[in-house]
Image (cartoon, rainbow, N blue to C red; front, side, top):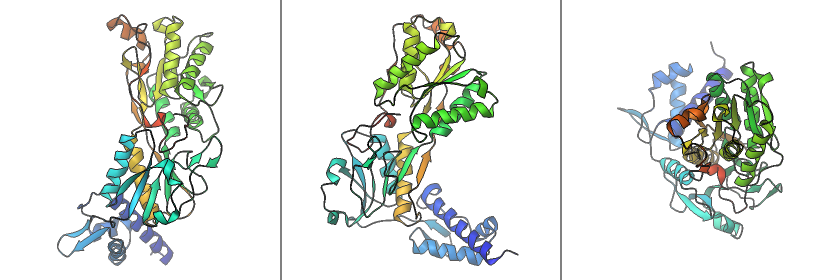
Amino acid sequence: MATRQEIETRKTELLQDLRDRCFRSIHVGGMLPSLRSLSDQHQVSVTVVRQVMQQLREEGLIETTSTSGSRVVVRQFDLDQAFLYGSSEYEHTDELCGFTERMGELGAYVLEVPINTISSFDASHWKTVRGLWANTFDPDIGQRIQPYFDFPVVGFASHTDPETDDSVRWADFDGAVAATQHLVGLGHQHIVFVGEFGCPSEWGAQRAEGFRHAMAEHGLITRARYVLAPYVPQNENDLYEIGKTAALELLGNPLPDAIIACNDAVAGGFLNQLSESRVPLNLWPAIIGFDDVLSFGGQSISSMRMDPRAIGTAAADLLWQRAMGQIVGPPTFRSVPMRLVPRMTSQARWASRVQQIFPDFPVTMPAVHRSADISTMPMADSHPQPIS
C-alpha cells in the first residue's frame, strides 16, 4: 500500500501532467481522459483524481459536465491585461507568430512594444502587464540593458539576465549530437568540427561539446578534430572568415571525411575557400551546418533547421507558466530542439556527383544565404549580438 507521502507525490505529478496537457497537448475544446483511466495511469484513487480536477476548474483550465466529462476551456484575460513582446528594428515575423499564436490558444493577448522605449516608461504603466518576452542583458559587457520588472520576463539564450529572468534557447548540444550521428551513420569517421568558440554556455562551445560527446559514444573520439575560432565572432562576416581560415589550415593535410561547421556562415566560408583553392571536387569532404539558410553552387547544404515559430511557442509556454505560478523559484531555461535536414552534402564525394549533372558547379555560384534566420539577428534588442 502506498504511503501518504507517495500518494501526495503522485497527486502532484498528476496535476502537473494535466496542466501540461491543457497547455501543450490538448487544444481548447479537447477532452481530458476519464477519471478511471487517470486513476489507473497515475496509481491514485478516483477521489484523488477528482480533487485534482477541482483544482484545474478553479484555475480556469477545464470545465466538467456530468454527461461528457472534462474539457479544456478558453481562458481569457481582461483587455487591459496583456503579455508584451519587446520589438526592435529587426523583424521576427515567424517567432512573433509562434509567440502570439500560442498566447492566443491560452486566451491571452500580446502587445508589441518598442524595446528601446521600455526603460523610459514609469513602473505605473505596467500594472496590468502579465509578462514580457524580450532580451534584457548584454553578455558582451555583462550588464542588464533593461530595468527590473515586477512581472515575469523571458529572453533568448545568454541575452537574458541570469539572476532574474527565464530564457529559451536552441538545444545546441543535442543538435550537434544529431548532426554527428547523421554523418557517422553514413560511414564518415574522420570528422572535424569547425568554429568552436567562447565559454561553455556559448552556442559555439555547446555545439562543439555535442560533437565530442557523439564521437566518443561511437568510439571515434581519437578521429575527432577541432578547428577553433581565433576570436569570438561578432557578425556573419567574422564567421565566414573563420570558415575560410579553417579550410586553409586543413588543406596542408589529407582532408577529413566530413566537416561539421558551427553554423552555415562558417560552412559558406569553408566551401568558398575549397573552390578558390581549386581543390579537386572528389576530395571535398561531406559538410553539415546549422540554420538551414545556406546555398552553395545553387544547392542547399545539409543543416540543422531551427524553427523560429518553435522558439516563440516555447517562450509563450514558459512565460505563461511563470505568470500563472506553475513555475516558481530561480530563473530557468527551456531548450528548443533542432531538426536535421539531410541533403546531398552529407554524402561522400558529393561535390563531384553534383558536377556530373551540373557541370558549372561550384565555380560560378558561390555560397549565399537564402534568407534571414532568428539565429542571425538580435531578438528584441537594440544591441547587436553574435549570430548563431
